[in-house]
Image (cartoon, rainbow, N blue to C red; front, side, top):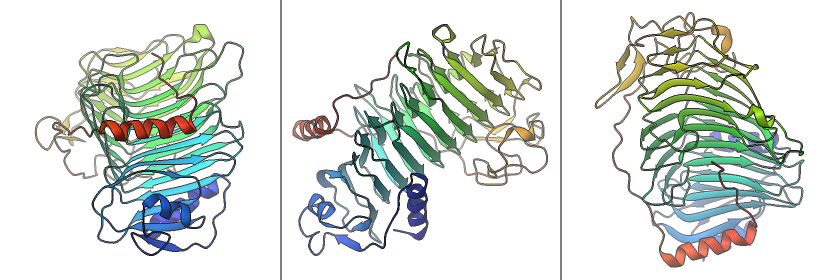
Length: 450
């Protein structure tokens, strides 16, 4: 494991109130306890140890991890495991994963008072029918438990032929989440009602999330970023989910199921509580750009700000905001088509051509031409000053902040043109084994309510 990944793992552990100790490093396959199966290796090493996997052929195991450790690629190898399940119940677990490909990762925080912290960096995930690349959720966790996810610098290829799954989801229904999802690339296709990033709270769950500098592209997917609180029973107490969504590029959303959109904010149940700062994103060439919706008739509350975004070229409409959201404002955005601001219309909004460099065709770029009206026309104060980089990794503010995900003085590689993605499948025996494993640790799986 690289020093950067180790530091990130320790930071996540500290954020979750956990401690790490001096640890050993093992190689799999290697000497005992790592001489037979990967599961035996995981069970045989000590807490906080590191396992370097020195194998390129996929390991045909569904491995359960219930103690703190790190899995990383050995130098020169790109390992793959059929599936990883990280489980925390009475004891807190810290897990880090780096350098894997074609592996499905699921993290479950159960009842018992422990917390779960997962760091996922530098991996290549490929999801398909029923299979997310990364899925983290709590299952009847204690109210004081924390579900921490740091997911950064990964690639996701997600497609489906029958029953879709999101590329990445983090869900808290009783625990408090602390999610950081940054610098990932998503290629989406043939997903029907599913999407790229799904961050959800409900019931007593809540917490905070940062979703920044992600590139999401493709076709036939329902949403790029879903940020949602689905509430609880009418008399139950709920906890707010708060987040910042910034410097992301979403291209090609075309779904039409439930609450579709390039970026979706949804507070859609009894007493749902959602607050979001949606700042300096570019959402383009899809069906619906940004959708902001709340069931205020059920006591839901949605607050925050939509500012400095470019939402352009979307075939149905660019921005749609429910009326009557007194705590939500939309200002300094640029659109190219129809908008429905409800009562959230603020100052500085523009309508026109944002003058992208070359938004269509091979090597498309959603940077700004030098004559773009989006340059130097945003509200610099809208962005948290600690967020200093644009999507390309260059300085976010050069003069007055630009609108959209790219600062005009920055440079970025062209966006690859998405093509059909292979759909990984499981043989019947492997699928049954996976289902039995999940049933053993989860009595109820959260389903999205449409």
